[in-house]
Length: 383
Ligand SMILES: [Zn+2]
Image 1 (cartoon, rainbow, N blue to C red):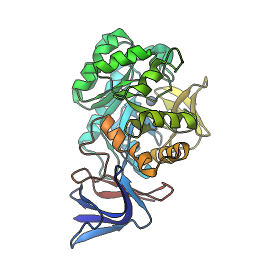
Image 2 (cartoon, protein in one colour):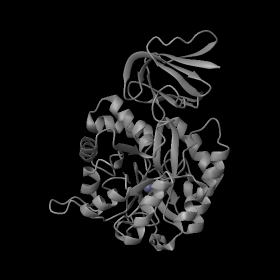
Image 3 (tube, rainbow, N blue to C red):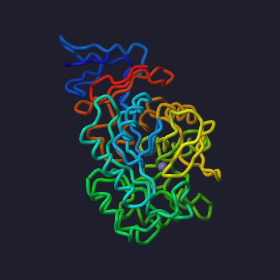
Image 4 (cartoon, helix red, strand yellow):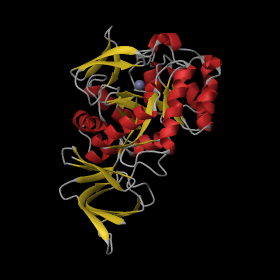
């Protein structure tokens, strides 16, 4: 049955209509604009006073609501997917940690199995973001050091065997890791610099090989120095690179978020949560890849105080971006929808309200609180 979302302010996000309709048919967007005729026998969803936007896309998220990608189970992916719609997320990339080949593969398989038979009332996994294991030890952050290795191990081809890898975070300055950049791109995945101490020059070199994305810019990356612009300088100054950032107010100073957005622009800056299983749960002790972590007052840390992911959710990420940068709402929404979709190569069907794309929609209050979420044309959440 056809549906029409009426009376809302529509943010596509590249266009803003103060009042327009979104027509949905067979799970796809059929038309968008003012005065779109719905015809008869059409279910009307009234969005008076609300913003109608594409569903959020989180391309770097380990877990939420007590579940973790590294649980390696279909139930964990299902649990995350169900929670995310309450935060406006309609698609996500379950993200692995540096671990044994067996443990990573178990997670890749679990995501693949869930993708074959996804729950209709939950967010959809687009594929896996592999964070590690080919990273720089001195920038490991919360990644378990005993499993850090180079791509010489050769196991990366196994990870790609099910065809569902969307991104791989690696340290491109390590000689043995360089071959993974072109390989990832040839398999339709983003090649991502992260947990890296690459120099500015090494980033430039990697861009030539196909590097096109950066994991949580500034965090666990060679810093910017005026005579040594480092990994951060390389990420900020290469337009080929989509730059993820964590806008929880803990990982980055609000002014640093503003700096990233000013330098990369809304069409290259990618809002992520990097959330772990404690997101959406009360303060307490949780687990991340077998390590004990403590969630307290909005921060997630290992026993030694190292930041270990966040308990951010995408709805709060977008509200914080608005607060930290003062940008128009359409740009804040773009960094959580169309830009992440483009960064992992799914913008042909996701990321904007355009005819022909999947009807993944979020209805937001003017304060950007989630009021309803729609996945593939079905309302799956109402606040
Ligand atoms: Zn992460």
